[in-house]
Image 1 (cartoon, rainbow, N blue to C red):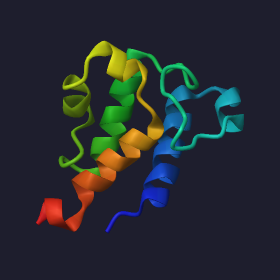
Image 2 (cartoon, one colour):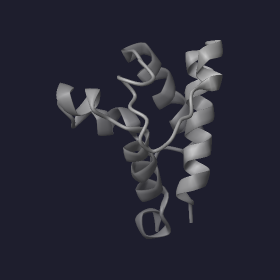
Image 3 (cartoon, one colour):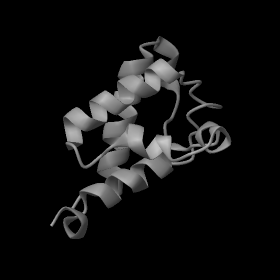
Length: 97
């Protein structure tokens, strides 16, 4: 079973690589970190994150499809913890069995 703390650590690493700025290494990325407000991720960076998530977790984690079901306000309010929960849900044995 995928553990939320391990997913958070992996996602935080991916986000820091995608941002590629020195300041990103100093920003704590927690479940409460907002993608838009705190990390200022742009749409191209969301695409890069989707690609990395799919490469790491497989086809079950369809980040782009999940985002596609949200309206703009939901995307702008999205927190890292919501993504972590989504990944854990997608990779749980009950879901993948």
